[in-house]
Length: 84
Image (cartoon, rainbow, N blue to C red):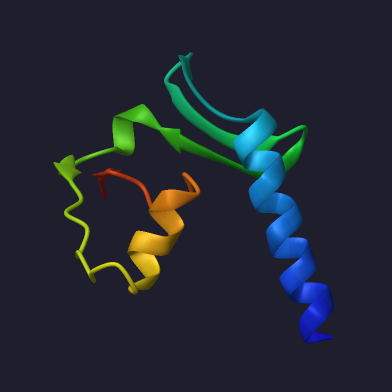
């Protein structure tokens, strides 16, 4: 089971590097954020009128062996902007 999960993660990482993209779209009062690699990924929607307290999300630098560093190598690090 562990090999299957690990293999799926590696496959997603390779797909993200080759064909992954992030699309941010604003229309009709809705902010849409889509992160996908050929349709595999996540989509989120936010009503603009309910967005408040927009800030830059500081990420913790855990050094070369930290999880955040490893994810940033593959372009999969967390969001940079946060809001309520």
